[in-house]
Structures are given as C-alpha cells and as structure tokens.
Amino acid sequence: MAAYDFDLVTIGAGSGGVRATRMAAQYGAKAAVVEEYRVGGTCVIRGCVPKKLMVYASRYAEDIEDAAGFGWHVPHKHFDWTTLIANKDREIGRLEALYRRNLETAGATTFEDRAVLRDPHTVHLLKADKTITAKTVLIATGGRAWIPEEIEGGDLAITSNEVFHLKELPKCVMIVGGGYIAVEFAGVFKGLGARTIVVHHGDEILRGFDGEIRKRMRHEMQKRGIDVHLKSVVASIHAEDGRKRVRLKDGTEHIVDEIVFAVGRRPNTMGLGLEHCGVELTDMRAVAVDAFSRSTQGNVYAVGDVTNRANLTPVAIREGAAFADTVFNDTPTAVDHADIPTAVFGAPEIGVVGLTEEAARAQFAKVDIYKAAFRPMRATMSGRDTLIFMKLVVDGASERVLGCHILGEAAAEMAQCVAIAVKMKATKRDFDATMALHPTAGEELVLLRTKI
Image (cartoon, rainbow, N blue to C red):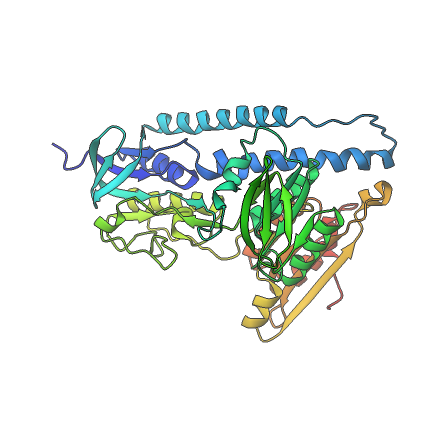
C-alpha cells in the first residue's frame, strides 16, 4: 500500500498550479489539484485575459474616431455592454475547458473543493468532508483583491473581480489605486464612454516604474479626459438614490455609479491551515520560499503570487515548471527573476524591461540615457494628440543596455522583443549595429544616438 494517496497535491488551479501539476503528472507522478472556484485562476478567469479583451473593446472608440482622418466615416457608433460581457464569458469558458482538458490529458486528478491543510502531508477537502494525503504539497493559491477595512461604507465598493460581471456599464466610475489594475481599468471605462475618476494616495501613479514613464502616462490619461486625483484618500462611501456618494479625506465629494478598489492584491494564504504545518509567512503573509520554491516545511512548496516575489502570470508559470523539474524530474531549477518584461495595457500602453533610470543610477557609477518622444505616424493623419516615448538606460562603462521603457501604441509587443536582447546583455553598440525596419515606431530603438 502506498504511503500517500498522491505524490503531489497542488492547492490552487491557476497558471502556476496547473503548469506544475501537468508537468509533474507527465513526469510520472500521481498528481492532483484542488480548486474551489474555477480552473484557470486569476489570470484566465478574472484577470489578464478578460481584462485584455475589455481593453481591446475600449480601444475601438479611438479607432473609429481616428478612422476619419483616413477617409472612413462611421455615421453612427453604439456600444453594447451586454454583448461584450457575454462574448467575454464565452471565451473564458472555452479557456477554462482547455485548462481542465490539459490536466486530464496529463493524467492529473482535479478536485472541485476547498482545501485546508491538517498537517504537512494531509489535505482536508471541506465540501467532500474527506482527507487526502500527499508526499509533496504545492501552494499555488495566488493573490486576492481587497478593500481596506477601515473605510466607512467599504461594502458598497467592488474590486476588479466584480467589474467583469457588472450588469451594465456605469455612467460614472471611480477607480481607487494607482497601479497596473487601476490604470488599465481607468482606460477601459473611459474608452467605453464612462466618466472616469482615479483616486490615488501617492504623489504619482505606477510606483516602481521609471519616473518619466509615470508622469507621461498620467498626462496621457488626463489628455483623454480621465480625472486623476493624486495624494487623495477615500474617507467614506454612502448609498444615495441608487448611486454612491464618495467623500475624500480632503472633504471633496463625488457622486458615482460604481467605485472600484484596485489597491493591489494580497497573498491568498488565509484559512489554508499553514499554521499547522510549520510554513513560515512573511510580513505580507506570503509564503516564504527559497530559490527552489521550497517553504520552511521541507515537503511544502509554493509558486506564484502567493509567494509575493514577482506577481506576474508568466513568472508563476515559470516557477511552476521549475518546481516540477526540481522535485519530479531530478533537475534542480531556480527561476531567474531578473529582467522580467512587463506591460500596462492602459490608454496608451506601456512596455518595459530591465532597470529604471532611478534604479540604474543607484547601482552603477555611470549611467547613460537615450530617449525620444515623437508623434506616431498614425496620429499625423488622425490628428490625435498623443506621443510615443522611448528610453534606453545604459551602463556607461560596459555599454550594456540595462533597461528599455516604452509608452505608446504596441509598446508591450516591442518590449517583449527587446527583452531578449536585454536578457542576453546586449550593448548599445549591438542596438546601433541593428538595421532599422522602416517605417515603424520600433526602429527608433536602434536609431537613438544622442545621450541625454
């Protein structure tokens, strides 16, 4: 009789958990995954994928306006929220079925249940009221959206989770926060026709991004009509005639249809029974892990946002794969978290990889900056008041390109390609030796010659 029911039990069927479980099963492990909601996790079900679909929807408004400069005339435009949500739901359903099928094909077992650890090897399934045992346990429960508990009337607000299921498009919406999610949803709601207000407690949006990118992004948002309030904090929310009266701590008030809190996500570790297993948590209640994703309890591992390392879907997937290789393929693999490309699908878009100017100057004796701001070719005909901004951060001693920061159309696509060069430690000389592809915005990256 086997000592354990499973070689691996993964708690959480998001991007990282699914990848780890599939690979472990393919390596011959008897593997299972427990998921209490839907297979696919935050990214597929209530994050990256549905958000990007809504971003696409929101951009058509500008596309229709810009088309006039190219001779196209659309006499009547009308947006239908229910059609967007229905089509989005259908696509998410298709992707969830694909994730389920991939697990099944790999030979993994899926439990639709809530899992709580009784000890390092015993998992209690609450709905089924039974326990299963595992030689190895993987925590892959991701992060959770939250609303600050101290806000009066906070129960009247929603998070990004609920945005995807609103019955109708609000006429006026307030977004609280200044990070990825806040900036992206501000662009979505404004693009779809809602009056949009952003309230952020900091002195600038997008903390952690390059300083120039942060300021330029805010200016672009404001040019598009998004009302941005910095150094502002919500004091209270009250229901009023089917709407919400929001009072800020400076005394100003706003009447809105919806208020969305997008103030980051917290590691989803509450109620998992980790206190029974000797699993140490950080100050942020993330699972503390080593380079190989092993927790302080030897047979318990964790990947993805629940570890609060680099909270991005591709990182969770890479960590899940590295875990499977380490534990079930006898190939110890540590994930390199340096030079991770990332994007903000706002209005306009941001794509970055590598160090900001501020971080580079703190680490290197000499830093050279190359940058350009120019009107995109499309805007010369459409007349839209917007710019593309590009910036290369270079080590002045070795000429290695330390960072690339792009704001504007197709920024994310360009950043993904440039990330290969940055990861390979390409130099500014390598960029200069690369032939330009004309006419493109991206050609500017290999034409920058003047140090700023």
